[in-house]
Image 1 (spheres, rainbow, N blue to C red):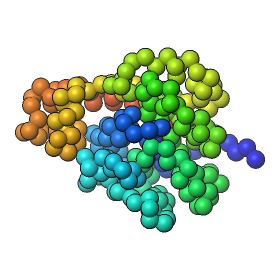
Image 2 (image 1 turned 45 degrees about the vertical axis):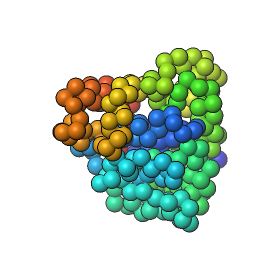
Image 3 (image 1 turned 45 degrees about the horizontal axis):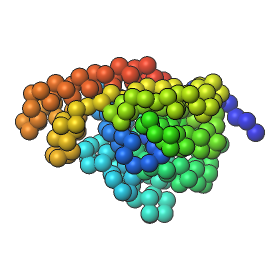
Length: 240
């Protein structure tokens, strides 16, 4: 039976899943920017890292992130328990983890309970110009349909020619049938990214860290300002 779309349900809680088709598309980099935005705008948000191969969100934001081991049966249940006490949860997923999420949603009956929980669900797809990066979107639309909101993040650090995606039938379906939204993630100078990676520094901490040069701090501040301007255009998909 068709249930009302996510947009028609009054929302008091939200799960945000950041995902991608493969490693190296900038998924965790996007998650780090989102967590920093929540901190800078005083939005209460609990973050989870469920990437067993590269748990970098927890690496850069250990005080704000809980790392879960998906090999442990029922590991994702901690997220469900957390929903009872916190309104906004952000989950940095492993690449191609929709299957595990679908099983978890079915086992807990979350989609059936979504209206009574006043729960919004957002899938954030981080993509590159590569055609293969869009397959997970099609899977998500088929699995979750109108029960979720969808946001595409075009990672400009990986290239600027997104014509394969922009001219695709999938994009047309996403925007017209499911009212998906799109934003871009601006590039950050590689030298600055490497510096943060070398010392495991989050974006906010970098602004006052003596190991980060004044120029790099300015670059990070400018990067965050651009990101926040993009996030402002889709805030209804990322907040309650």
